[in-house]
Length: 169
Image 1 (spheres, one colour):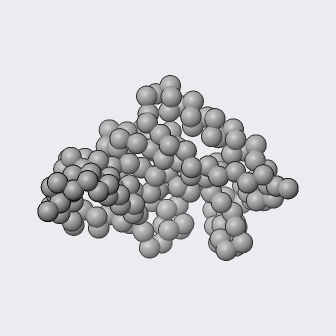
Image 2 (image 1 turned 135 degrees about the vertical axis):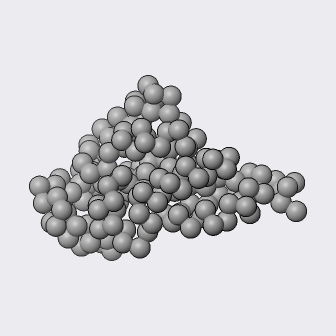
């Protein structure tokens, strides 16, 4: 059975449906459940991830997992420059999660048009910053990474960084 399993099991989701399986999940000894989000604003989340559970449901899922003694983490991904408020997310979720993970937005050809359209409709003043980042401006990510690490260290927040910097050649 699962009770003596040495397997590390990890689930990463944007869905509150994970709570349907609480009874089963509680039987897995080395389980971690991660829920990804990049805002606490339901409208922004709906625009960015129309098929994912609402932010309210995801926050409620963290609470249910915690109540059931299931170890969970928040995967703050992708971080949208000047939109994702990592401090607000940490403050809201810190009593439910054991770890925060951070990943920066990677503006690639296959998602570029969707991101630009989202910005045009919601944050037109940020378009020039995103264009600059897309063309290789790494200072933004370097400063933000330093700020996140400092904030987490000063506040006793366990964290992992998944910022992938590709310097332009």
